[in-house]
Image 1 (cartoon, helix red, strand yellow):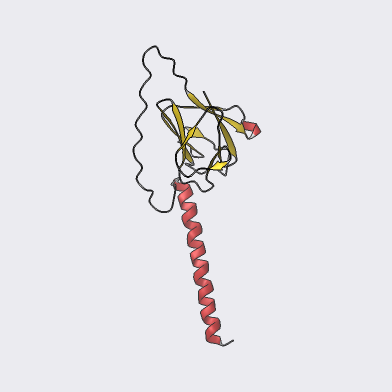
Image 2 (spheres, rainbow, N blue to C red; image 1 turned 90 degrees about the vertical axis):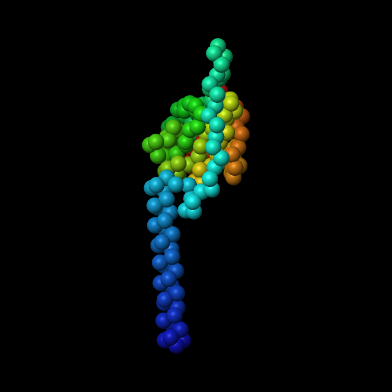
Length: 156
């Protein structure tokens, strides 16, 4: 091969290396910020706050209870309105023990007594009963939500 072809190939390899390093830096920065995606997320429709229960009514509250890992089994998180799920300290469901969970991984929403879950653009995705979700998904009592390596069960 001629020297000019080798020089062009060296520059191509160098360019690919820079692109790779840039991608790694962007992903790490996104995780540290707790943002869902590299692109600006589409504006979400605002979720109406749930109406307070009528006086005297005994509306059961939703809870997400840790099933796995074994060391955290039984830990319970009350879902009141809108709750973020993630590794970040500001999350209502803080899963700091799971390194596969994003800073803000998902959202659980109790809307008029119905529990919903949605992925917040996490790196590893959110699963409901073993199926990866792409949109806001309704949960029923006993459904299992997996974020990272943690499995949470919806209970009333």
